[in-house]
Length: 278
Image (tube, rainbow, N blue to C red; front, side, top):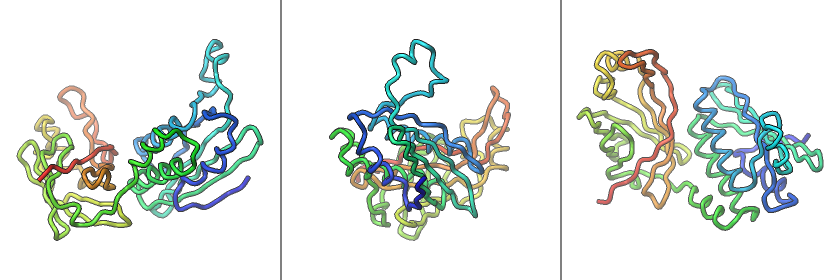
């Protein structure tokens, strides 16, 4: 087995897939093994990989998951993709293995990311660039991939009004590394932001308020305000500076009717903020 250390995990697809026997190779993707990360974070990475594999080839279920009729219709499997994610000193170590069944060749790749946001957001752009440049996908898929490329973020590109998140009417950034979010409930939240390696990091900089958790019942909102850590967001800039695309890390209420059943302290949600015309 060949093992490589990569700064991103895109390039490994190109030499392996370029020699496939057809334009649409059969690909089986096995669920990732994960340790030390949330199930939501794991699902986000898996959905990212699947979305790009669907552009490239035919996804094939494991034979154990198929009935006899579907087994006879299953296309040939050219590649089996598996991997794992685990935490090491606050970093996420992503290991991916690609088995080329026609030759028995196995290739293993490792990438290191400082945060969940960096892993998901950078993986998307790395994969998009790799598939687009490889020539192994259709022009439509290449165009779609190219649209995922992150753009340069600076303070000037952030100035203005943004919308797009349920429960928040608008977000405005200031030049001082601060901003403000106006909630549908009327509450205001002071934000701080920084830009690191072209990823925008936004953090709640106000004490929790019941009104941040509207429309939860008052008692549930009170418990959320007492227990929840500050909300955080991580974004890349896309679509000619008009879209911030990324992840929100925040507490989530698990309700049973009007009763708060559980507080999930760190839930991960994909979202977009769109810039309003001036």
